[in-house]
Image (cartoon, rainbow, N blue to C red; front, top):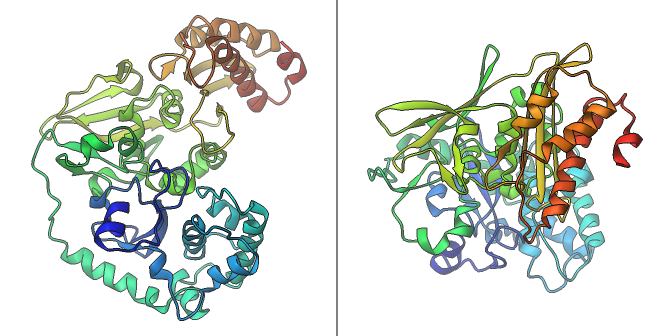
Length: 452
């Protein structure tokens, strides 16, 4: 998308920065009606497959132009929130996305909207002040009011946004399937947030089957005590899901540790699984949920546990022509507790050095079932089966947790790399296991765990 808007459409306000989705200089808005009404989300155009723009409204910084500076640009100028200006278009786009969202009009939410944007010379306090002014612009919007209508009526953004929903709905009816791809072994691409970093040159001209907008691969639904998720569901979809919010109250906090808003808007759950990274955050979460996946080759389907998908480093129990069609797991009962922990060089916007998730059921004070996973400690995303077996049937105590941290060392084979030494990763896993229990059982004496 970045190359298309700059070199084909000559819209050069969208900047080229890192080409890895980290800096936000290439941020655009993506408007779609997949939910039945107009919704805008930010995206890093350097990683966005051009095919994923099909049937959508793509807005670059030029699309926010008014006769004078729009009110977001004016806030940035008034607060001296721009210096060299290279990053400014991305910040303005992210704040425009916030104004077009249904998020509460708080300064904290406005600042969170620019969590994928980096500025190297201005200083963030002036940008935060500008974000606070933008939050004030939308403070009078009502919950049931159309954001597009609101920003147009208040002169925050151009008035043409009001007509976009009708145009997209009409386009949706008339889409002619021009992206149909019959090649059974074509490269399948969801959000592209990792594949375009790792394999850009390889897939730039490859035969691609775009999966992100396949309605059959989307959605989150509950069937009694089971939750089913389409593999093209994005991280943002998960965060906004009433099912996930109800059963995992801390889920939004977990996702704050994973990438940035624009990446979460694009990245798909299936892509995280199939990418097979040993530190994939959602792979680790769903391993602890003991998820089951369904694979299809277009004719036949088969199910297997997520933990059985990974045979070795980046090696899957999946044929080339197979693809994910759904993901399922049993929703937690009242006696079930869940937690996710992650350590990385930066708290946010970074890949894990070690991450871990746990789900356990407790009756009285006795652990009756437990699933424990960890990343960054083996060639694959790992279930810690020795530790699980040790914990089942045991009453919870500080001594038990310390011993479980020791047993976990027999489950893992970390290596030294750029994210830490083998010894450091072993220490991190021990600390994360302790952190799980401290979070889930606040009555424990944390001091006696953390000093050992």
